[in-house]
Each structure stands twice: as structure tokens, then as C-alpha cells.
Image (cartoon, rainbow, N blue to C red; front, side, top):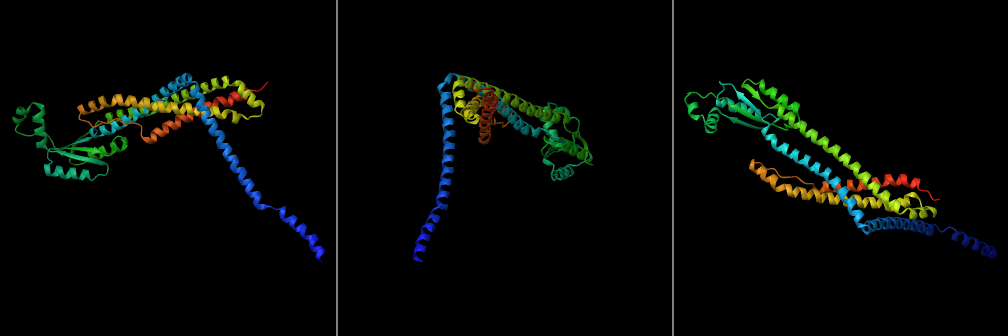
Length: 339
């Protein structure tokens, strides 16, 4: 019985040693961590080595980045122009008012009640009543015919209610409906508003928006082609290096990684340079434009790229650089085969 126990005991000991669940888990976790660190190390090396190659050829890099920066600054500059025009259109909204000329038999008290009822309309932003006496004083002051008007003996001017619609430049149909509503009022003899001016302004703003989109698309395509051609030339210069890498078994994704990062750096630096170009242009134009606005008693201030818009600019320019590089590399590496 003891002998049997001694013979059976080593077998049990051997069995417990062949099932090391804990060590296996630790080894597999260590492999994943090592692979992750190696992955990030490869990308970090490709990122900074591609930056070093750009620094090593400063003339070519500066020429390429300058051309791309001019293209990107044109697109972003046109975007800022449209944004400032929209701000200007918002300021001009105050001049887009409806004038309601009341009937002669409407007294000042009834005119005030009518103006108060209009003010309660949710589609109206502001209401101003100009009584007959106020209109006469203004006419005598600015027309130069004060003495001739006094000889009439009667004030021929009507009470006028000036109405500023809410969001007048955004919904033309609502503005027309509001005008028709005022025309049907008993107190109103004549209602006037320059609808053609509204239509022209809205058409101009829509044209500016679409023109900005088309210009941005065209310049974006230009950035793709310029970046792609730059990466194609770099690939041609490093052809022997790429062929050797393919001979030793390197995949296309491994080979194109540093070139993609080169495209990223080109796009990123082009976006930064474009931001500075636009900033300098805005600083040059800011003072004369604001002085011109002050001469017309306006309060117009130039808008510039906000923090979020700056980040979007850098992201798009970097993305265009990567996409242009990827498009060229996908085709060129397929054609490039070791002999």
C-alpha cells in the first residue's frame, strides 16, 4: 500500500506541473503589451524620421509647403469673406423694414394702439411710430421747404408705423405673408417694403456660399495633386531602398508608412502657414474697414477664424496631405516590383 502510494505520487506531481494556467496567461498578456509597444515605436520612428527628411531638404520642402499654403489660404480666406458678408447682412437687416402709412382719419391715440398690437406679433422684432407732428418736424428740418409747408395750414403727412420683422433675411415667404397681413388691416392705407432688395441680397449671399464651396473643392483637389506629386518624386528618389525592402519581405503598408507621415507633415505645415497668411491679410485690412464702418456710423468688426475653425483647418489640410500621399503610393507600389 505505501509502495503504491509512492508510485502514484510522482504521477500526480507531474500532472500538476503540466497545467500552469497562471504562467500562460501572464505570457500571453506580455506578448500583447510588447506588440503594442513595438507598434507605437514603429509609428513614432516613421513620424519623426519623415520629419527629418523634410528638414534635410529645406528648399524643396519650403517650396512645396508655400504653394500648398497659398492654395489653402485662398479657400480659408474666401470662407472668412463669406462669414463677414453674412455678419454685414445681419447688420443691414435693420434697414429692411416695413413702412405702414395709416389713413388720414386715424388719430395719434389710435395709431399708438395699432402700433402696440403689432408689437405683440411674434414675427415682429421692433415697432416705431412716427406721428404726423413728428414727421412734419423732420420734414421741415431736412427738406428745406419748411416755410412752404407752413403756408399749407394743414399737415398733409400721415402717421407712419415702421416695423422691423424678425429674421427678415432668412425666410422671404414669411416676410411676404407678414406684409400681406398688414395690408389687410383697417388702419393701413398703404404698406411698403423693398422686396427686390431682399431678393437681391439673399441671391448674392447664396451665390457667395456656393462659390466658396466650389473654390474650396477645386483648391482641395489641387492640394491632393501637389502633395501626391511630391510624394511620387520622393518615392522615385528612394526607389532602391524600397526595392530592397520588398526583397526582404516588407509589405506595402510597412513601406508606405513613412511616406504617409511625410504627407501628413506637408499638409500640417501648409495649414499652419495658410493660417498665418490669412491672419496677416486680416490685420492689414482690419483698420481701414473698421474706419470705413465708423464713417457710416456702423459697428462692423472683422471676423476671423475661431479656435475650433483653426483646428478644422489644420485637420483638413493634414488629411488632404495624407490622402494625396496614399493615392499615389497605392498605385506606385503596385507597379514597383523587384526584378
